[in-house]
Amino acid sequence: MKTPTHRPLFSVVIPAYNAASFLPATVESVLAQKEESWELVIVNDGSSDDTLAVARELARRRPDRIRALNKPNGGVSSARNEGLQSTKGELIAFLDADDLWLEDHLTELHVGLGVAEIAVSGARVFRKDLDDSEQLFGMDDNQIIGFPESLGGFNFIIPSCVGVHRSVYEELGGFDETPEVQHAEDWDYWLRAIERRKRFHFTKKITVGYRKHATAATSSLENAHNAAVYCLRKNIINGHPLSRYLEETAASYLRRLGNACIRTNRLKALWYFSKSRELKPNSIPTILAMFSCKVRCHWLYRFAKGAGARLRSAFSF
Image 1 (cartoon, helix red, strand yellow):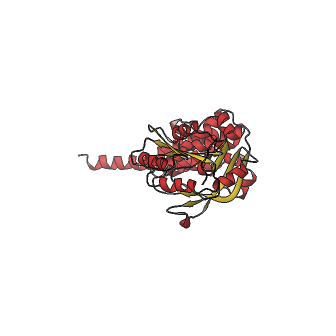
Image 2 (tube, one colour; image 1 turned 45 degrees about the vertical axis):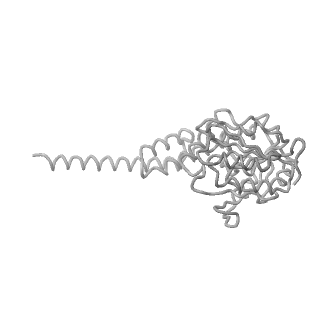
Image 3 (cartoon, rainbow, N blue to C red; image 1 turned 120 degrees about the horizontal axis):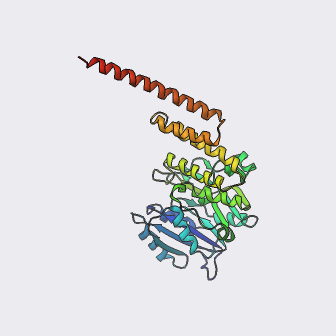
């Protein structure tokens, strides 16, 4: 492997929080790249495990290639932004601390970035190693036809699949560090790129392994959905060209949140349904879900009221 003696072609940024057990394999997948002109910046985001020590050891072994930065915990956006500020490459590639790259990933990104400002590769979901990978993570045929506008309906891109020209970062700035948007900060970035009319290139070739595990940041469905709604509303308020599409998507997420808690917290479910109707007042699925929830609430109220009356009667003398 050649040692870069000048500005590298790629700068790779890895935000890492409590990733000590995953980080060595992730970095090894970068070291194995066929594309040899790159630098790697690992940012420890105030981890409580040995992530910082692991990152520093990896940097010690390859000081010509790898730098380890440390910062107080502030979330994945602040960690990525910290890394971005210290990069020098003409092109930037994102990689999460628990994911893996196949050896031709940067090569494929380089091809894509020759014809567009943002390049995206395909990925497979895995749990322990790439040999037990499951389904494709990414676009179906309809999403490919409408890409990148189809991103208004669902975030089917993971950061580890993405490379951008430095000019994109210089124009858009870093990732949004607002706490409410964490879990959807990457989706917000892609939407902002669409708003600025950046050109995207997608290849179906699988060059990324997306690790699925219990401690993954996207494990909480409610947190992820609420972050998605915040991201979508933010872009709607800012006058995004896909606002009508984003309204439908946000309403759908709110309806899903309502359906998820309709058995355990019907008042909360009604709140989610009402917020969904604020965006799409005539949505038949939301109207039906809200009606069903109200019927259940009314039935429970009548039941509780009757039970209360029977108890008072039983204990009255």
